[in-house]
Amino acid sequence: MAEPEIFKATVQIFGDTYKLRGPASPEHMERLAAIVDQRMQEIGQKSKNVSVAKIAVMAAFHLADDLLKLQEDYDDLVKLLDDTSGAK
Image (cartoon, rainbow, N blue to C red; front, side, top):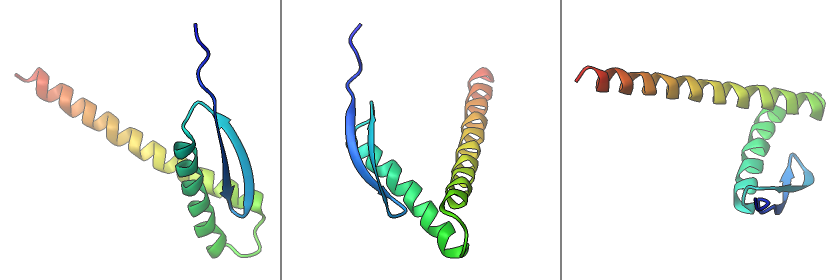
């Protein structure tokens, strides 16, 4: 079995530079970094005198909340489609 291709990207998140490696394209990693950076910037502007670590945890919490809501919406749509196709 062939090893998956590993890509590299250098990104900026909350003023720090990170060198990332992974199976996702550099463009995808840059988009992810932009989302994390934006969320941290929003929280950092509202939460003065809070450590970067706490801002990162708060951003992770908010992003996890977004993910959970999307998963619940997806599950609801799948159930609706199953119910609709089963009714025919």
